[in-house]
Image (cartoon, rainbow, N blue to C red; front, side):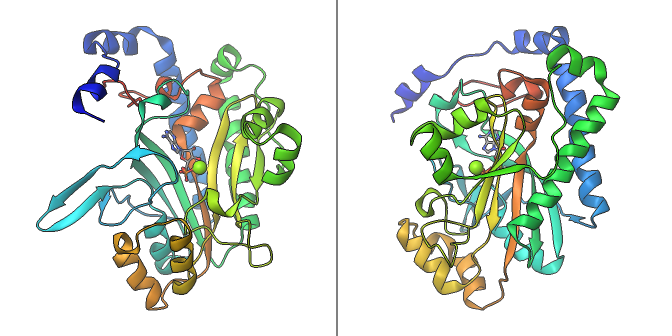
Amino acid sequence: MTKKSVESMVRKVDTVELVKEYLENPVFKDATLVQSEILKSIRHVLDEKEFVELLPVTVSPITDPLNHPHFEAEFEYYGQKYSVTKSMILHKQVAVLVHKKIYIVSPNVRLETEDKMDSGRHLFDFVQIDMEMLEASREDVFDIMEDAIIHTIKTIKKKYPDIIRKYHPSLKTPSKPFKRYTVKELKEKYGERDYEKIASLNADEPFWMIDIPLMDREFYDKQDPKRPDVLLDFDLIYPEGFEEAISGGEREHEYEQILKRMKLKNTPPEQFEDYLAVAKAGILRHSAGCGIGIERFTRWVLALDHVEKTRLFAKTPGKHSI
Ligand code: AMP
Ligand code: MG
């Protein structure tokens, strides 16, 4: 894309009007209050289960390649090429060797394309709580994240009943265990194209979508050894049309297998030299984990039309911002 064509797509924003909106539209105060509680509640559950909170990595020579179109955000510094962090997945696989249970409140910069402007779900700078556990299965991750979500909803309903009544009076506290559906089941029921969206619209509680097809995900999510066409990974889907909440999975840790998976997706191994060197040395071990987007969680809790209303200084794809 030329500079000019990109500029003509940008939606300009008046900075003074934006700041006035923060002060005049109560949604910003209400949503950030609820969001603060979401962060505290998830931290509380993970801390109780003896997770160690690590600091985020914001720039690195290696980061998540992602599985969808986006612009790169890279720079060179003293001869080393860096990217801003798109997710900490590759760092989590190493960090979990130091502490068996970890989480990070992790800012991710993903330069999403402008067609995502009005999706309601995308920012190009967002925060996820990214967790990982050594020698764990996806069932272990479900157990912990279900506890975190249930505790969070209960706490918010108790602490801010007026806000919930105003924005999302029908918000249900989900019950454990959340339902699970394979992608195959959902496609059979709702069709090949919009199965995730329709399933979300038809649900009234969050559910796990499991057994994601091999080619739909990156090299770090583990191939099911018994059914090689699917991965041991998952998404959590919010009900009422709010769609994806969480992505996660069990991880690949064996060098040859990682290389094989990279080749399948034409991922250039030279971009992951540091990561592959660690895998080749046989240091990585089996782990499982996931990331939950904080702005999307807030959006669902308050049934808002766009994640940009859940925080101050939101960065919406294709829009100017401060
Ligand atoms: P991923 O592993 O790529 O699915 O990212 C983990 C979680 O972060 C997702 O399930 C979403 O909740 C959230 N997320 C991903 N991309 C974005 C985005 N562009 N804007 C806001 N939240 C996002
Ligand atoms: Mg995802």
